[in-house]
Image 1: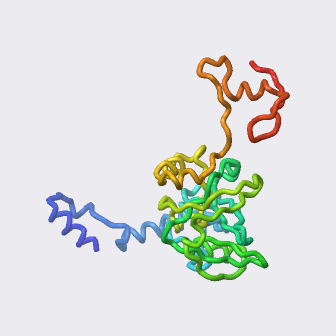
Image 2: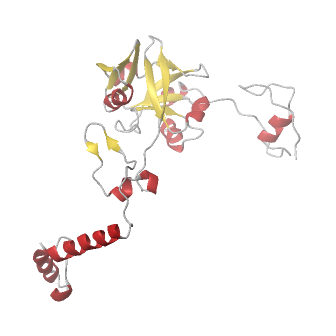
Length: 253
């Protein structure tokens, strides 16, 4: 292999001193690495113990440099923790959206699903959830349950779901911004926090855009007002805030 490298380099016009050329798979170099590790072990520089690494329950360990997958030692690989949020259809089935920011659920205006990618039913106990086909086996690996029927995206697009905590009913809208391989294949739209959601809503046909309710009412503050919207909300302690509890009175700096 080393000879092939030299030949390729010379074909590109690169001058290489063959006496100083080596590869990491040359016998001499591999012998040097073995010697180096033996010396480190003799001096107590090597420790063998368990370490944490990402692993697939089906395919096994991630086949890359362990220095990248050892999370406890600052490896570059990451385990991304999503929060699953269930939105309920009128027939009782749930659509599970995966999010990195569950606190933004109060600003959800709609759900996104891919227009042509089917959903899969995930049966967990007595409950049935709809998620992307790629997500269903992953959820079963982590939480159990079994696969149910395939559901065409067209069956849910245009229907409404009830959001948890807020109880608001929001529509299910199709969009190609959904990556079926990411998360659960169902995305909760929060245009007030996610520019991609705001742009996707703007690109919808006017009639369809009108079906998406605003996240909440805004405080109308004149341009020349001495206080900002947040400051005025704090000062009005005795009155109700739009779409929320009464603001607590507090000092205005």
